[in-house]
Image (tube, rainbow, N blue to C red):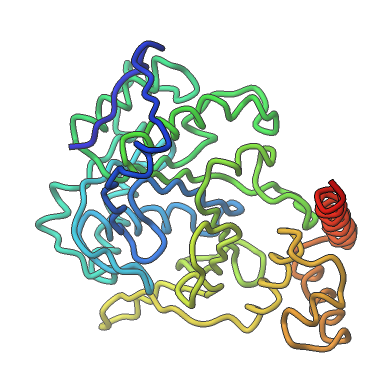
Length: 349
C-alpha cells in the first residue's frame, strides 16, 4: 500500500546522515510501462487541441491497469490506476475504453477492478467537482487515490482540473506541482495532460512557463503529422522532449496510429519517423548540448550543409524558430565559457 499522507507538521520531517543514506537499501523502482514509466515517475503529456492527448492518456491507463502493451512499451504486471478527467463526456470515455481494450491486449477482468475513473461529467448537477488548484480539492482527490491504493494517477487535464487566472503565470502551477510532488513521495507515478500553446512559433511549446518542467521526469509532446488536427481516427507523432533516463529506440520519435478496419482486429501501429534525426537535433539545441552548427555536425556525423537543411526543415515543421535557434546556441556558448572560466579559476587557486 502506498504511503501517502496529508501535510505533515514540521516536527515530522525526516532527515538522515550521509552514512545513513549510503547504508540504506532502497527498494528498486518498478516499471509500470517499460522502459520509461516507473514508480515515482512524473510525466507531462501535451499537444494541440484535437491531436490525441486523451487517447494517449487513456491508453496508458488501460495498459497499466490491465498489464497490457501500449505501442512498444510493456506493462510487466497490472497496477491500480486512478484517471481523473475534467472534460470528457462519460459516454465518450466508455466508448473509447471499449475501442482500446483489444489493441492494448489488456486483461480486461483485472483492468475492470484496477482502473478507477473520477470524472466531472459523471457527477450529478448539484455536485461541485474538486478544483486541484485548492487544498480542499486536492484533499478530496487524494482520498480517492489512497482508498484505491493507486500506483499510477492520470490528470486529464490541467486546464479543466485547475481553476487559475492565468495559465502562463509561473505561480499558477504551484498548487498542481505541490500535489504531484506529494504523489511522488508516496511512490506513485503520475501523468499530467496539458495543452500546447496555440501559436508556439517554435519557441515555447506548452502553456505556462519553464518552471513547471523542473519536476517532471519526462515531457512528451504529441503532434499530428501534418500539424493539423486529425479527422476521425487517432494518428500522432510522439516525441520525448525531456527524459531522465537512458535513451534507446523505445523513447525515440515515432508515429502511432489506431487502425480499426472493418473485419480486422483494432491495433496501434508504430512506425519510425523519417524526421527523427531532425527532432533529435532540435532537442540537442534546446538542451544546450551544442554551441555551434559545427558541433551539431560532429555530434550527428553529418556535414554542416546537412545541418543547415535540417534546420530549415525544423523551422518549417514549427519545431523551433530561427530566433530560438540562435538564442539557444548563444546561451550554450555562454554556458561553455562560464564552465571554462570556472575550471581555470580552480586551476589557478
